[in-house]
Structures are given as C-alpha cells and as structure tokens.
Image (cartoon, rainbow, N blue to C red; front, side):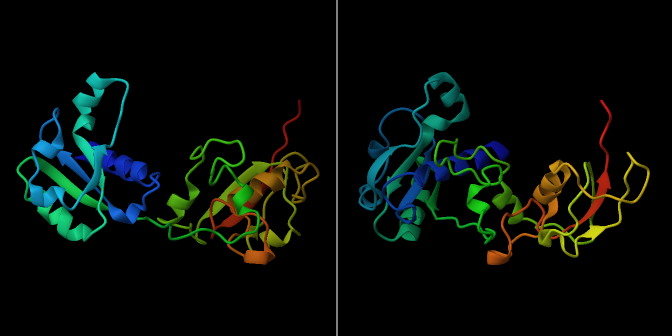
Length: 226
C-alpha cells in the first residue's frame, strides 16, 4: 500500500511537467502489463482521453515490471475528468484511475530573500539541482514549529540586537570564558541561529526565512580551543 501511494505521487509529479495543464490529465493503472491499453478499453472511455501514453520509460525494464511501473499510463482529458475517472474505474482492464490536480503549497514565507535560500527550496535556478533541499515548504504545511520549544545553539554566540531575533532569545552562557556574555565575536553562531530560528514570514521587515517559523532560541556559546 505504501509503495502504491509513492508511485502515485511520482506519476502525479511527472504529469505536472507536461506542457498540457495538469488539471486536464488523468492517470490509470492497467491490471495487466504488455500490449496496448487502447485494445482493452471501451470506445466510451477512449473517447474521453487524448494522447494516452506510458507514464514511465525506465531503463531497467525488469525492475519496472516488478514494481508495476509498466502498467501506469497518463492521458490528457479535456472534458469532464470526474466522469472520465468513473468510466475508467468501471473498465475490467483498469485497476485504478485518478484525476491529476494541481497542488499548491499552503505556506511559503514572504521574506524577500527566501528565493535565494536554496537549502530550503531549491528550484534549480540558475545552476542548482531542483528539489535538492530539505523540503522546508512541505514541512511547513505540517507544522511551523512551536513557541513552547526551546532550542539550544552551541556555537560562537549570537548577535542579540539583530531585529530578526527580537523576543526570541532566552538567557544563555559563555562556556569558554565562563560568564553570561554570549555576544558573537565571530559571526558563525549568529548565522546558524538565524537559519534555525530567526523571525520568518515578515515580508519587507525581514530578510531570510528560517526552518522553524515560531520557536524561541536558547542562545549558548561554545568555541573550542585548537
């Protein structure tokens, strides 16, 4: 069941790359591999579809067959997709069918520099690898963190006067000098604390978004001697 859901998500992602709008497509899984699906579908179902083709073209055909990838097809559906899906599900040769919808993420921070933070959302521009990130937007759809959680950052200190940390810092300790002065004389600690918990989703008031949009940072300092 889990693998089936993963495959369905993969196919949906593939259909979104088509020049045809994703809102006009359907995916279907045949019960048996091999042959042409057109020969197994009724004229009524076929009349609702355009450009019926395989969803995958894997190099390893043996593995594809084992996973059932050779039974998945995608097609344009310019008419009523719901009716087309209902008709396809009535076909004996079809194991499953679904309409492909466009998915929009529920939460994307409005911080001006968010588009430059490839580690959070890598679009591949100008020379990166699209999707090579921590999938922060997907995670934010589930949770944006909690102000009841305190995170300890053990680093070179923190610039407590920075506006992105306002109201988000609790007392820490300097373990190098054995005092309570946690000011950052290096910059690394402030940078890391900012990635983890600077104020995000602040529009023009802030610069970058951070992983947790709502938590309070517990500042700590640790700078080991070499």
